[in-house]
Length: 87
Image (cartoon, rainbow, N blue to C red):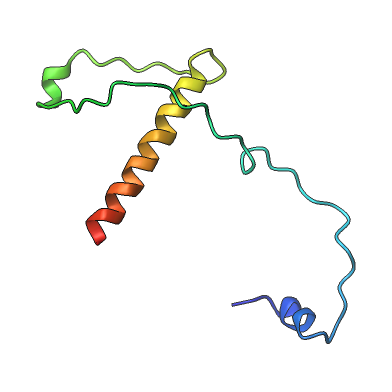
């Protein structure tokens, strides 16, 4: 549902003032990470066989671009798989 003022504005019944400030949100307009070449061979087995697992914070480190690229890649794969599962 459109806000009331947009309904009137779109119908030409009122004139809104021009926008004088556009809020800058760097997270919304972030550049896509550079894709990295990674081994995509599926890992098979139980989680307990993969121990020891270690987790490390990468925010503001040299590893952050790699993490962002891997995350972007996994999101694309999940989206592709969910679309094909629905078809």
